[in-house]
Amino acid sequence: MKLHREFQYIYRKGKDTHSSSVVLFFLPANGIHKVGFTATKKIGNAVKRNRAKRRLRALFLEFSHLLKDGTYIFVAKQTISETTHQKLKNDFEKVLNRSNAINKELK
Image (cartoon, rainbow, N blue to C red; front, top):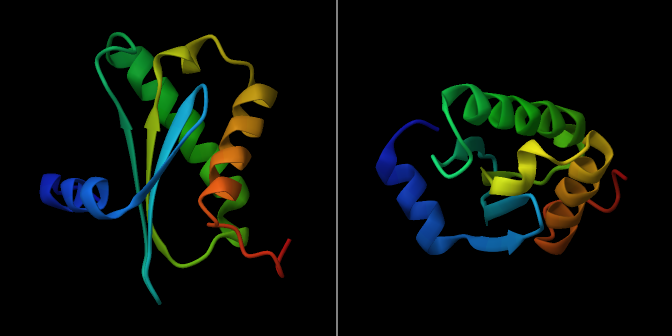
C-alpha cells in the first residue's frame, strides 16, 4: 500500500488493536492481501523510523503464512526503538490475536 487515501480508508473502516509497541489496523477482505507499515516522526529521525518499519516487516513475514485475507496496517509506537525482539514479537502476536487476523486452523 502506498496511497494516502488507502491508508485513510483502513484507518476509518478497519478494526484497531493496540499494544505497548505496535498498533494494528485490520480490515478483512476475501482474496485481498495488502499490508502497510508506518512510523511517525515521534519515533525519531529517518534512520530510527526506517529501522522500526524493517522490524515490523520482518515480523510480518514470520507470521504471514498464518494470516487471514485482508488489509493490514502496522503503526510503530515510540517505545519500539527500546523494545527487545522477543517483547516486540509478543506484542505483534498479541495484536494479531486480538484482531482475529490469525487463522486458528493453520496454527
